[in-house]
Image (cartoon, rainbow, N blue to C red; front, side, top):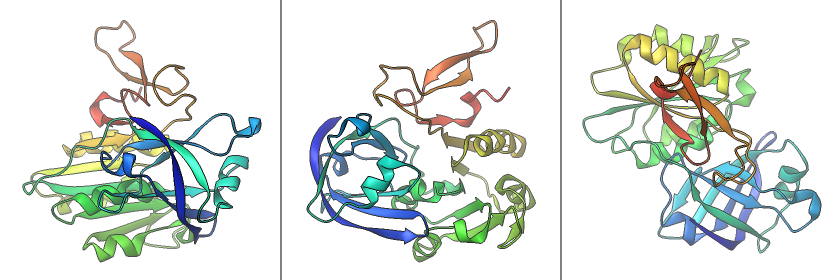
Length: 262
C-alpha cells in the first residue's frame, strides 16, 4: 500500500454521466489485482478533505496506466471529471481484497449491476478464458463497456427494469432463466448495488454455484481505522449469527456465503 502523487494522462466522458480517467500510477499497477480499489485525494481544498474510493477498472503494469471509471454524483467527482492531462491527485493503493482469479478449469461468470461492469473489466481481461457477463440496469442507456467485454470474447446477457434491453427484470432473475448455461466449475463474480449482491448471494446458493461479491460501501479512511464502511458477515459464534466487518480491510471482496443476508 503506497500513497503518491499521480499524473492524469487522459480524462473524458465515457457515456452519459460516466467518465473515464487514466493516471500514471506505477506504484498501483505493479501490485493491483482485480477487485481491489484505490483511495483518491482530489485536490487540497478543505471541502474535499476526505478521499474518494474507486474500484480499479484496469491496471497496466507495463505502462503504469491506472484506469478508473466513475459517475458524477457530487462535488468531488465533478472536480475529478474536470481534470486535464498534467493535473495530479494523490492515490493510495491498491487496497482491499481481490477476487479469486479463475484458472483454466473454471468457467467465469460476472454478474454486474449499474456500473459494476467497470469494476469487473480488469477481471475479464485477466481471466484465462472468456465467460458470460450478466449485466443489469434500470434502462438500456445505463449500460457501459459492453463492447469491451465482447472484444475480449465474453458473451453478454442483459437485463433491464424497463425491458428496453434483453430480459425484463433484474439480473438475478435472468441468471435463473439461464441456469443451464453454467457448466461444472462455474465461478460467479458479483459487483453492483448492495440489494443486488444480497440477491445474488441467495441465487448462487440456490443454484449451487460458488460466488464472490464486491461489497463496496461509503468509506472514510479506506484502511480499517474509522469503521465507517462496516457490513454484516456471518459469524456462527455470535448470538445473533453475525458480526460487523470492515469492508475496506477484510473486503471489499467476500465469499458470498460469508455475507449476512438476514
